[in-house]
Length: 415
Image (cartoon, rainbow, N blue to C red; front, side, top):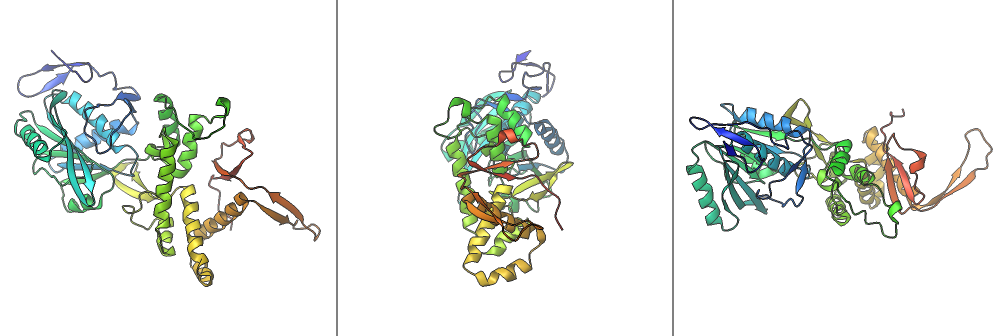
């Protein structure tokens, strides 16, 4: 019997080049797993453990099934940036190394400089432990890489984190990367290559992960007592209304990091110079590769090799519409022509954005009853410093006096 240093389980060597595990690893049925710290990554993961999403085992089985076919040799696991494809890469390594202890696993991280991809680190795994590695020097990394492939007597699989330019001619490869135009184009006509799209997180999944990992989030709200600090689940929900199911932002422990991510979205939106560009994004007709900060991949639940482009979050929609209004303010004569050719959904978004902007900024409304006296009643609304988005489960007990509250529950169209 040979002990498994990664999982604590053991396996028995058989005749030939196979091994059979005789114990289930401790993390197999758990919602969290110790992350392999030696794993080379495009962007470092600093937490000791990860949350094991429900989709991980199914995606793992699907990849293995495809790579065992005679046609598919390469799979790219992709999706909306920030949903944890590199975390799944770590899960894949630990599970595959446990189930295939004699297979040589070559893990490589890549980094980009413009449109060019460079090898960053190489770590070779065999019998569930690190057999060789190179953390610097392109010559040394290539040497370790080539040596590992040459000495792989029990088979070899390549796991890449980040887009790359290396495509082994015969070996199996699984690449974990965000949408990358050059990498997608490079493999577009390759019948042995498949794109597999990972789903975004649901709100409940994010809140559960925060609880399981016992995350401590900095809300960046000065002057509040401990009792006044928002709950982690509430912070996650607030971020969800902006970033939708992107785990990187929704589960971030630094409020400053989240603010910087919001600035990134704002910068992308400010770079739109034409209203038609924004219109295509609102109608989900724009190329997501260029606007993945504000749009999202939604894989088919029954077939992750197919996807649709999801619309921006409610919050991002408001930013987009406000950008449209700013662009149009310089060309007021074009407003009527612009509105006449737009669909009802966009008109509704424009109207809602204008109303919310005025109400949040503070104003006085003169209200008249439809069948009342001719004289109206003035209602003064104070300026709000922050916005609170809420859904159908919102209760009066959650009202906050200094926030402007926006209902994001979908409602039937009024016609």
